[in-house]
Structure formats: structure tokens, C-alpha cells
Image 1 (tube, rainbow, N blue to C red):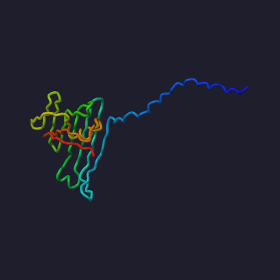
Image 2 (cartoon, rainbow, N blue to C red):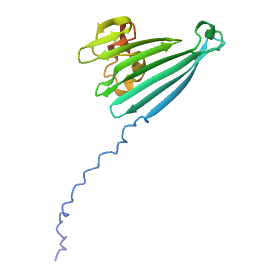
Image 3 (cartoon, rainbow, N blue to C red):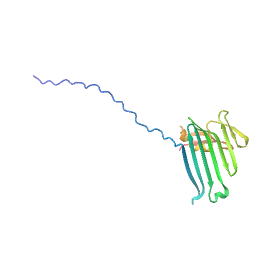
Length: 173
């Protein structure tokens, strides 16, 4: 009699394993306080002209940025004493939103107050100007892109100092 080969038996259905999503590291969070120290030099010979410390502090939905700088060497003859700047405000879904910005230089203090509800910024010397979104102060600009990275290679925004508002264009190259 011919040898009969066993009929193939289908293997039992396997439960299809769904590959797990790759484990993504959580985004890095900034520590609650960052201090950056700078030394400024001028020219090809590297003349020291100043030192500065830049500090970012944040907690919950609030931030505070401050800087203290002092001219050194010959620059100290033209700009004696310390210069201080401070920005305070909120951390929003769109990044940093200043409420107060101030600058102090040798017995002189200037400030700008941002009133987002009324859409006005109160500048030094009883001047005011309309707030157009987005508007930052000079210290916020340095951190804004960490808190809200730009979606395009070119964006426009305003920078309010204590005396006026500048319209700027930022291009990522």
C-alpha cells in the first residue's frame, strides 16, 4: 500500500503581537533656576569689557528673568557701575508673556508694564503704546523659543523696551 503522508495540519492561530510603541524620553524640563555667567570681550586682542550674570527662575505658570552686568577695564570709564534688568510674567501655551520689565543703571530706573487685558503697554515717561501679539521684552526674547519653538523658518514679533516698541523679523538659517 502506498505510504500516505499525513495531511498538513494548520498551526493554531497565533495571537498577533502588536509591537509596543517606542519608548520616548519625556521632554527635558528646565531646572527651577538657571544662572549663566558671561564675560564680554572686544576686538581681535580680546579686551575684557564686562561681566554679566543672567538668571531664569520659574515655578508653575510664572517666570522671572534677571541680569546684572558691570563694565570692566576701559569700558568702566564710559559705563560706571552695575546695570540691572528684570522681566516677570506668565508662562502660557504660547510661551512667555511679560507683565513687568525694568532696567536700572546708576541711580536711574525705567520700567514698562504690560496690560494684556486692555491691550496696552505703559512705557517710561507716562507713554503708552498698543500691544500687538506677540510682544516680548528684551529678556524674554532670549528664552521664548525654548518655551514655544517657532513653527516656521521666519516669524515676526514685537519687542517692547522701557521707551518704545520695535517690530522685528526672525529668520532661522
